[in-house]
Image 1 (tube, protein in one colour):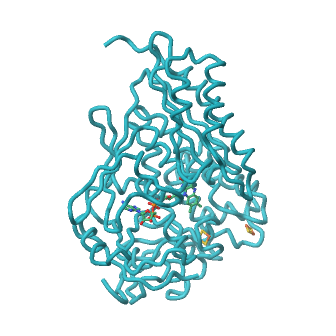
Image 2 (cartoon, chains in turn orange, green):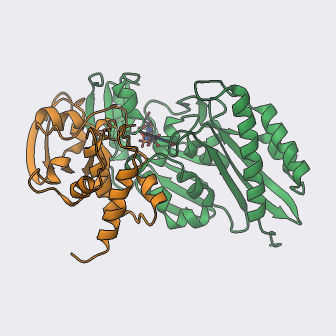
Image 3 (spheres, rainbow over the protein chains, first blue to last red):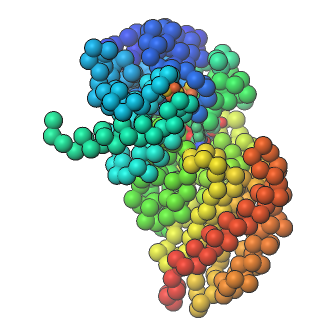
Length: 160
Length: 292
Ligand SMILES: Cc1cc2nc3c(=O)[nH]c(=O)nc-3n(C[C@H](O)[C@H](O)[C@H](O)COP(=O)(O)OP(=O)(O)OC[C@H]3O[C@@H](n4cnc5c(N)ncnc54)[C@H](O)[C@@H]3O)c2cc1C
Ligand code: FES
Ligand code: FES
């Protein structure tokens, strides 16, 4: 494939087809092409985690992927996690545990935690902290984020 | 930030990938997990004219164990390497090393072979490939090669690969259950690149060390084996005097750089301390080798 490419992908369950430059980052595609600005961009080299999304069910840095690479994939972003009127469970836990201040890092944390809760044991605080270690927050000091995850892990075991 | 413009190709097979790299005339780049390449492209430190995406090539995501060797395919992600039960049991030193590699989200995409090809002097996987006498299996339009890990790393981010050469699998020794092993790393923050790390294996025969292997990283321009320190230990009783001699030999061999994070002296000291710990740990794990 040379030059611009036609891609079709699903974002939060909705299908989109767009023509893109190969060099367009997935993070910029979500923000600028689709207007989904909930995915934040902090460092653009993989260290801060603000741009974390789910790609086919697993967390990925959207700044370290090209939009063309997501052709045929299922992407989930923070916009699919809830609304102001109806917060999703992770958002609700963040609210209850004061796990955000400025909120810049929050979308990346929420998407990472979604992967953590689906695929990882998180048996103790050390495991929770390790799983969160790829996301940077400059406000909270992490303590309240860990508290929110601990509560979510407890809830996870219970029947709905 | 935007990478410089390039063409993109989703390779359908190994043959398709290497032919496309060859057609790009030395200016093509393979993308696997992208967890090292994309940052460099975002910074425009790397500006390929063609990006060959190998993520959709079938049959590259396998881990196989055969005749005392373990093979890791080009699309095996860190997440899988870290959790694989065969690796945990038969290559425990790699299993231990993976606990130090990056973070959950990066591990979802990064690949073992990509890390070895990237050849960061402070990365765990290249060092383990070197420790376990690894072999890099490649493909080119002219056929494949088998490159010993010893000849693979040429300098920081430099390897013996040709521009149209694709790594399909990396192979290394598995460890018999009675082999002792040790892995020690020091990083400022868990999951970050380390200041230094040391990995060792040692067999025990008649109460003495047999065929010890020592590899270090973070203290030179590439991962390194330590033949002088290995020789100092071979046949020894692995007592404190023997370990001290090996540590001194190791410190005399390396010439670490100073940077923002640590002075050269500190790194040299640290590598010795880590080697001592790794060797003592390995000897505790080693069991007497029974005569065949
Ligand atoms: C925040 C962060 C923290 C990290 N921490 C660590 C750490 O602690 N330890 C560590 O070891 N690594 C760390 N990494 C790097 C990570 O392990 C990468 O996944 C790895 O270095 C490269 O693998 P990749 O599959 O992503 O390769 P890519 O980024 O896709 O490629 C890297 C290089 O290898 C080449 N290449 C890749 N695959 C092949 C192949 N099959 N054949 C030929 N050439 C190939 C590419 O052309 C490129 O030059 C970190 C990365 C990030 C973003
Ligand atoms: S913006 Fe992607 S990790 Fe920081
Ligand atoms: S809440 Fe401000 S950076 Fe995390």
